[in-house]
Image (cartoon, rainbow, N blue to C red; front, top):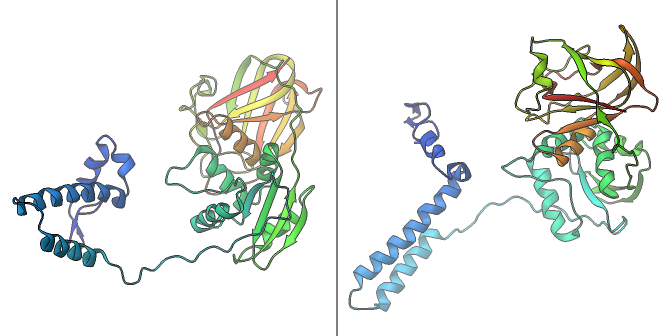
Length: 352
């Protein structure tokens, strides 16, 4: 009857029986009908074996066996099976052998699976990927690259040199090429008929955070929906605050510490929605309502690192300039996103 039971095109029942099936142990792993069909194939083969043994109580009958085998062969024979085109191979001999490969633009599922197929040949580790189960960092990775957020690539540079392949087979490659042409430290190593290849160097993170400690927070005031500020301090990733109607310039959170302190870092946990990171955030620090901006930037790269660190909490760690002091921290959105909200499950202010 299908996921929504229907007869002759008319929906008869809303969820059952498919919904009941999904509630059984293992049902979530068999959510694709083709996978569930494998159980039927297994049962069918066992029934066929039992049936054959009942039809041949006196032993093997070669003629019957050959006839059944022929029928099975004809039933499953495919004269011509349409398949997708094989992705074009990419020659990566011009890049560092240690390079992690990133393929742009991230257009759809095919572009990601094509990157995985090409990896069979070039054998470099790749950042692109596709699965029915989306890992916490994957939504951030894809959103960041679709929105041409350069911090996504900067985050990956912490794991090694990058080889960025900009495919010319896609209809929308110009923005990706423009991003790489102005990316700091990037150089084009090859221009192939189907792609342009860029080499990005490895970067190291030398910031020392071991001596930082959480500073006591006295009050939190958020714009938008009325939410108990305690949800941002309870350590529970499933309780959160989020903006209404996407991200709007001016959405903000005001954090007041118990007293003036040296502030080294602000940490924002995204919790169960890693894709709801702030597209561009400004942090201002001050006292008594007087603020001075100390940091502004995109956060896709920080969200990507947070998701790789902890898929449960997804912490964004924003290091502030040395010498930043004050009692109040104002977090405010600078850019807008009409479809994705900004959400936070927990907040911490680190200092000494």
